[in-house]
Length: 152
Image 1: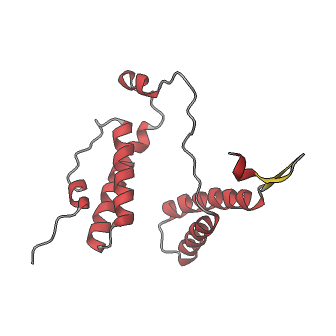
Image 2 (image 1 turned 180 degrees about the vertical axis):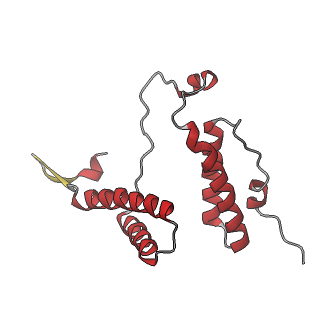
Image 3 (image 1 turned 90 degrees about the horizontal axis):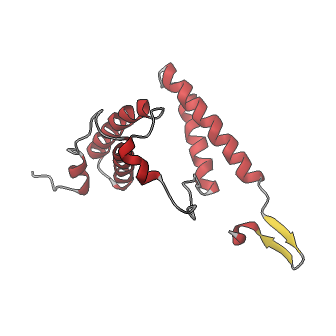
């Protein structure tokens, strides 16, 4: 039985290495993660996770290196951007992330080095979750109470 090529199949052969620049690697990571969410096939998901892991492993040591000269222009603006990258999951989804990470830790199936990383991630997510839940929601104005989200 022949398999039908999918969008993911093209990602299995995308070439990247330690010679790729960090922007290329970041874009590949994004594509792997997006396709992983869209995939329903377990084998495909596993292959995408492997590619994502390899790409992340190459990207990690580059994070503290200076931006290469040929990319400086790409990161230079004349005006402030209207939006910067931000982590803004819905509160219910954020709660599910925290619960899932907690359940992973309870299951004690992870090696100690991964447990440390998951604990750190859980700490950051729970703090962010609590901050989101405790954040002000309204601003009192001379015209009455206004939702803060409506102001941005």
